[in-house]
Length: 278
Image 1: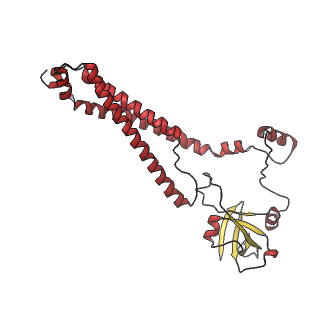
Image 2: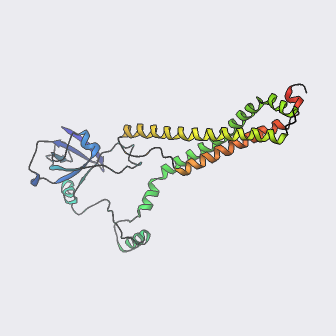
């Protein structure tokens, strides 16, 4: 059975599955969980790893199966990975003492920018970057998506504010006769305005609570579906406390503002006009 793993720099890695072999005679490799599951391999299985389908390849053993760290940049590529010891990889590629990338860890308290500057000044043949710089460069696409979502959010907020205002105006208009009767019996405008404003506050609070609950349900459903679809533990929908409090405050503010405007318009109208006789 021959299964291509990945194509990179013109090299094609191919698995040639064979029977069991002595563990002491074969180098160990680590397989990504999804790859091990797709190839039906478990720890202790052996196979041949080759650059070409017709090449004899190198006999290796599954020493471990690991869960890859969730990475948004890798989720849509559908690539599968395996890890090898550097001497085994160099022997397989036929390129000893040659690497593409090296990851260097620094001790706590040492500035990453200072380490990068020192390496670039003292060495020749490679370029050092900090992890923050690499992350910033690789996340440009996500920044564009974030700005796009922010623009959609602003448009949605403006449209929802207009919609809330229209709903509150219609709701208050239904109270025209009630307001006219209260005015006829001597109830002050301030009392009527306060009652209508209190009603708007209650409606705004209930709407904020229901909207927050709906957001959590939709977020949970989104995460469940896409985690199953991509077979990953990556979080696709994240609702933070900052988002919740901002949304609740904005919802209540818009609801109260719309209710206050609609109530002010109602109490400013003469009772006879409200009764339909003016």
